Length: 116
Image (cartoon, rainbow, N blue to C red; front, side, top):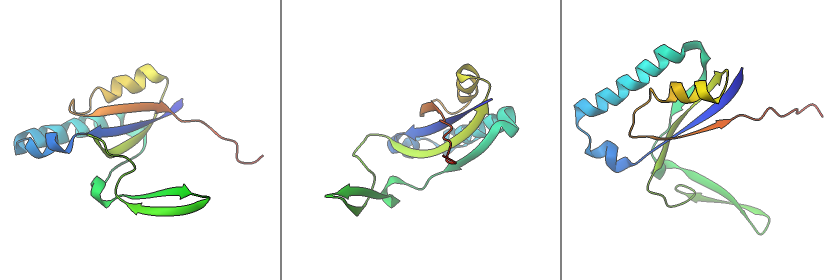
């Protein structure tokens, strides 16, 4: 089994413009994802809005904090899942259960040996 990180991005305008019924349908897509993927979900959380973000950058070798997201973008990072799948095809098939209003970035997790 291999771990895959699924980054969920969406346009806040899409969510805000959706009816309550559509928002509930998207929620049900997540419920179905949890039913299908079950114990293969290692972690997953929804994130607060981009306006609550704090960004750490290094400038001239010193850390600098700024309020807000890293870059201006039309999409907001809304959450993530960490799943364990046999391969990318299985991870993609599971992600197809999630709401179609999302852009999903699916990446293999790199195992790093920290004992060296």
